[in-house]
Amino acid sequence: MVPAYDGTCAECGYVYETVSPSDAAVAMRSFARRYRAPLTRGLPDEDLDDIVRRRPAPDVWSALEYACHVRDVFLVQRERLVRTLVENAPVLEPMGREERVVDDRYNEQDREVVADQLAANAEAMAKTIEGVNADQWTRVAIYPYPQPTERTAVWLVRHTVHEGTHHLLDIGRVLRQVRGR
Image (cartoon, rainbow, N blue to C red; front, side, top):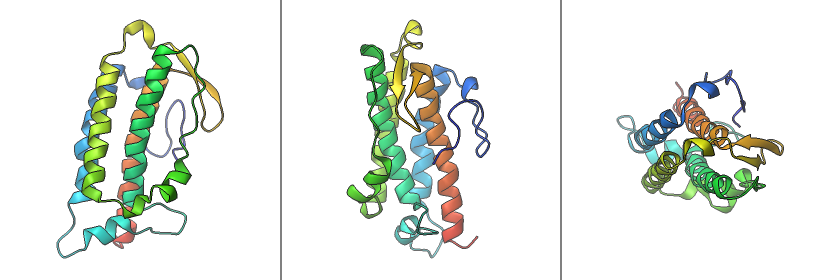
């Protein structure tokens, strides 16, 4: 779970208000390589397929599950942004984050395919961000999580970057734990 929804995230240090839309587009594009590395480059003599699928505890996602979640967050957030730009105060539906882990069998997916899909979704979000007009950033939607709250388009984009940034921290932590480091 990502703990901050405004201001500064105490865990990862992400500061919402310092991220401009152009910064967000750049950050979105950076996620392709930043997520690909832990999913495709293992340490010598290790079974990376096993490592990325291993949960450090029953209630903590594996690195692959976090990557699948982020892939889907980028897809859903782009759809939400588009709705916010074309509808008046749409009520955005929850993405079913916990259900997707099981229903979509995150831990059984191909890690390289997930990296490719995450990169494609990040690029699509970056392009959508770049197409937003200055006067559209204040458009609002009712964001569903953790409770329904009115949020602006710029907040939605900043939050998407926070999700990507924060879950990289989670993946690093999980990989260190399953590797015993």
